[in-house]
Image 1 (cartoon, rainbow, N blue to C red):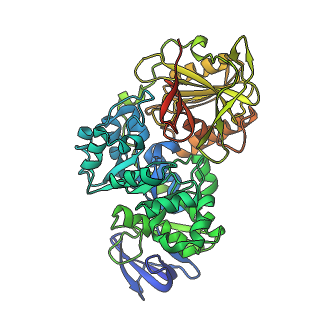
Image 2 (cartoon, rainbow, N blue to C red):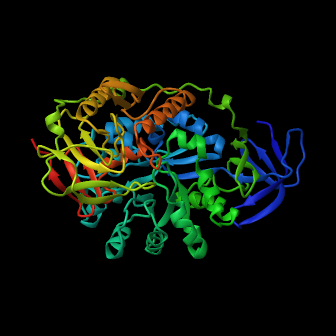
Image 3 (cartoon, rainbow, N blue to C red):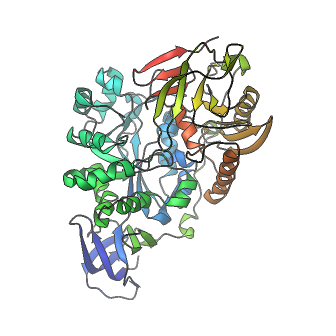
Length: 553
């Protein structure tokens, strides 16, 4: 490979947090020198800033709804050159088969994809998922060159109880990185969680929570995704209390293609932090070397000799305007992605089985005040409300304020179904349903009438996964996601156009524009995020970590 010289640029030295006027010499895809160089292949970077490629420290590729190659095509032009992926969603559906798929599908794509082994399959005993993934299963993946450790340990009550199943997984990964997931955990319980071996946390929603967890020994991943947006709540506190800044980094966790298209990827975390008052070099360091240091990535995160030539060329340091992106010395362009998509096993394309759908299974009895899931704009946490809801003949009737939320089991042919009122979603004149329902990924639906809810669920089964909008018994929009009911096989640009159309139609049905109608709905079945969730087995009080009431009938 010919040598390449980036001339006359300003290098962002994220290790020393300084700016250096110098040339970068690239040979064989790596940084070969920093100084003054000349040659036949030069790129004039006068007035430009040269940064390390951005790193997403924790992401579920599945949340983009695109296969890994198409995900790479979406994020790399924004400067993201490395991600640490947790295939928790896919593995909940298909276990070892899904782990094999994600490693195979990311083997030869331009984006550097490292993988964490999902720890919580399923996340709790209060739901039905599609597959098991035990410590014994993990042994075959542990020594893979791109596997870095144990994915987010969501079942923190099991850790606190020192349950053998989760402790075996932690012990297996004792010399690797162990990611955490413990929203709101504090005090002695937090200390016990960290002492068990958990090392990172991406669920902080306030600076006070982040500071306590950092002082307890955790590295903090500040998340800015499509539904969970935590930068604005954490970064100002960190700016005024910066002594632990090197222990902080950025992640997206869950970000849809439409949000990436409109905002960017990790670049958005950086830009938003700068707008809140953080020094640009500090924000860039959080997007690069802090993550590289935490996860032991010795080829990424810093522009220094011997590292991969993953370079983001910026027009503006303050606005984080991306002029060009280079991956291992090659400019990121459309031709880079003209490679075959790895084939998908047929069994990964047939994962939706519904049994005995009926209106009787989704009736909610009303007697006085009953539990209601309260949505919070911009967050995936919910409120546990107890309110009087509209009813007829002793059963809940949805209206503009209270929608009906339903979950239908789709993996093991159990016929489980459950329903509850949800406040803040706002859908009227129909229903929306999806097979993307964190983390067990049963079918979740919300609507203002039972007929459209059941019609939407049946349409998901016919597509073998995806999103669908129904009004008056007619399908108004659909987005097939046939790979485990989570991913599309369409090119990212075509997928994005379909998503944009679906979003517009969803908002026309009254869903609040303060929430992402798809990704937020998907989180309403996640029983490890406070306070109240719905699974196929019923309502879960996450604070008490117990099933509130079992499915009737």
